Length: 289
Ligand code: PAF
Image: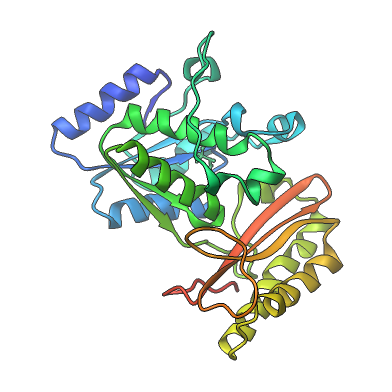
């Protein structure tokens, strides 16, 4: 069975030992409820030269802006361990909350402008929780290549910025979105969708596909691309937080004609909030199904 550690000091020692044995460590931080999207990150770590991949599984309370969301978040440690074993993961770190945030904890890592818009606006405190836990995981792991999914595109950019700003010995890699055949972006939150809502969730993929097709046909107007993506989502979702065209590097909103862009979406179906995005004019642009 894959090695499982719960204690942060034991995890740090295990990572140090791997490096001492000549392994190149790959890190895949997760909140568990692993799906093929996470396992693709394990493969990507290996493709980027990691010879020993460690997966962390921690439902980080500090990054949830709603208690009900934290309570409902799926927890499936046994099947996660089996999936890690089957994918050739060397080590899993699954700490308890009080091991990561012992009594008296009061230090946070905050990234600036990149964390303010989009998810930063709609989920206050979310990124402060993400960057704090990821900084802790990076420090415990030590030198490594760390892989994140670009479904959480803003998160990936923020973590990359934080890593460079703090000079951490980590190479941050962003892996393209992994989708179901019908286009739904893989997410642990998909498990929370009611059966009747699953087909409605595809409205996001339909919207992104329409924008992608228009882009391929030469459409470059940020407003037109936004409108194409928004229409099906507006029809099928209960509430939209944003559908926006932004700069893929600075994450600032774009108007008028765009040369390259990221189309970002966040919307609600009942109690489930889904996010997705489409890279336009970025080589190679991932296309929704
Ligand atoms: O993307 C996630 O699953 C989480 O935000 C992360 C990066 C594991 C931090 O808790």
